[in-house]
Image 1 (cartoon, helix red, strand yellow):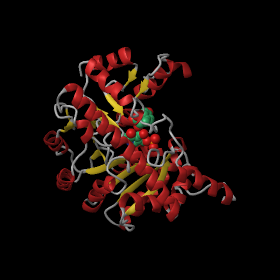
Image 2 (tube, rainbow, N blue to C red; image 1 turned 180 degrees about the vertical axis):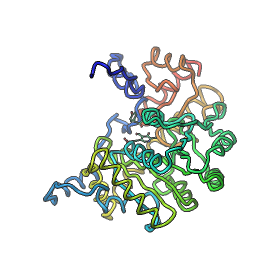
Image 3 (spheres, rainbow, N blue to C red; image 1 turned 120 degrees about the horizontal axis):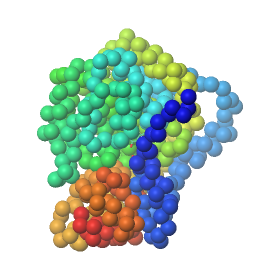
Image 4 (cartoon, rainbow, N blue to C red; image 1 turned 135 degrees about the horizontal axis):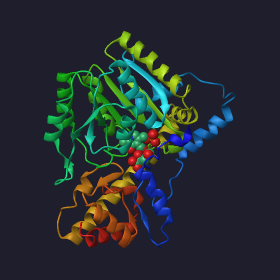
Amino acid sequence: MLSNLKPQAADKILMLIEEFKADTRQGKIDLGVGVYKDPQGVTPVMRAVKAAEQRIWESQTSKAYTGLAGEPEYRSAMAEMVLGDVPADRLASVATVGGTGAIRQALELARMANPGLTVHVADPTWPNHLSIMKFMGLPFVEYRYFDAASRGVDFDGMKQDIARAGKGDIVLLHGCCHNPTGANLTQEQWQEVIAILAKSGAVPLIDLAYQGFGDGLEADAVATRLVAGSLPEVLIAASCSKNFGIYRERTGILMALAENGAARDLSQGAMAFLNRQTYSFPPDHGARIVSTILTDAALRADWATELEEVRGTMLGLRDQLAAELRELSGSDRFDFIQRHRGMFSRLGATPEQVAKLRSDAAIYLVGDSRLNIAGLNRDTVPVLARAIIDAGI
Ligand code: PLP
Ligand code: TYF
């Protein structure tokens, strides 16, 4: 039986990790996988996370099962962090295995509710969105998103394309810090997206994996809150991997805003059912870290301060890289790096130029010319800038 299996294509981003490790050159620079690294190249455990783990270790008396939906404290703390004012009468939620688990469960839920749906997804988007939908056999179409000339959003194209989504279709949107481009909608553009969805009855699924990495914890939630406050049905898949730095704990949440209390109850039941079919109880440790931090004023303040430091470090690197490139190129054509938000920027380079960066300068980007800003530090920014010019980008 097992020999009938077909070889599966490896994840190109995860493959880069191995290729980088195997490179023996001094001074190699890893700008691949989306993991935050401090200027020393370390992905730290955040102070508040350590403190919360200690408290949990000291106070936890049982590791018996929790509930299929996860702990209520975690779900309410996350709803407050993401939504601000929580419309409790409309909100169903379950803890999930990371943000990826939330996306998967959201798509399963949508298909249960509307077996004939099509998913509308940004071109480009996080590759796992596409591979999950392919694996599920879910029909999807891409909407225009990235304007290769400006490295901003092709908003006219996006509007035209998402207007094709029909009632009960899903439109998958990045709540902030678009992966892989770094280009994001303005608040006015979000309002226009909302108007299009309100007219068609298509349902937004917001992937929120980088809250706090763009313009700040509150600012990065503004779009999600606008959508949640304006449309009758909204799905939100949020991840705690990046903003709490607890990647391997696999901590996420799926929230569904329903039209009324009866639909909320149906959604809650279906979401708990989906958890049970997939893995029964969601993981608890990461969720408990998050709720411990969010419900304790001192821990929360310390976490928010450290998250701001992380965000500030990335913004400083963006400023420095744009300034170096302005000087070296004698133009402002790389200023988009300063306008982009989050961990990533898409440079808009060709695959050959990306390969040249790797062969000539030992600098590793994803093949679509996405770079992880957090892989840089003040010393490596000039090295990258020089290599970008030398590669003819
Ligand atoms: N969505 C996007 C756009 C991402 O970049 C990520 C990645 O890390 C995720 C979702 C899911 O993250 P995780 O499953 O690690 O919580
Ligand atoms: O896009 C990224 O780099 C992050 C991390 O299969 C990631 O989202 C990459 C690939 C993957 C899982 C996570």
